[in-house]
Amino acid sequence: MRHDALAAELRSLRDRVPGITDTVLATADGLLILADAADGIDPSGLAALSAAVLGLSRRTAGATQQGSLRQTVVHSSGGSTAVYAVGGRALLIVLGDEGMDTGLLHRQTRPVVDRVDAILSAAWAEKAKDSSTPSVPEHE
Image 1 (cartoon, rainbow, N blue to C red):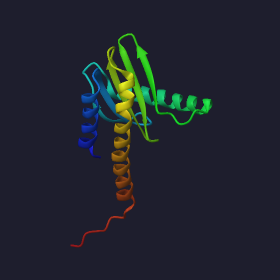
Image 2 (image 1 turned 90 degrees about the horizontal axis):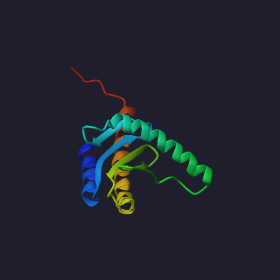
Image 3 (image 1 turned 120 degrees about the vertical axis):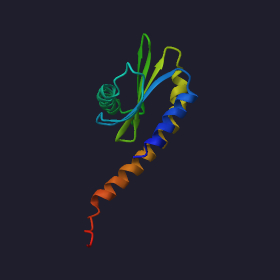
Image 4 (image 1 turned 180 degrees about the vertical axis):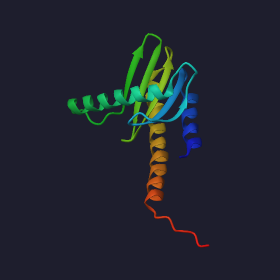
């Protein structure tokens, strides 16, 4: 997995959107891939909860027949949490303070999601290729 490239994408998003406090990348079933989060945040727990939110949001999008889900946002008294679908197999969680501009966040996140999806897809394709290639015994 190219964690360095993924981390660079998360940092670039944080640099372009004032107010982002934490970012987490996880599989669609809630397994943590990478986190840039403060000590008070449990990235693994957040990944699992966000996977559930993403699943419910996808079902809601399907029931309303308004196309495929892009993101879901929770606005709280202290800030916002946005969960973005990254292809069909991953999700990006972005936490922000009260001053974060969610419109700017959405505009800046779309290309990041596309690049993260490409990085993950390539890594998963390589892993699948490696696991399907039979090993050749070494000669003594």
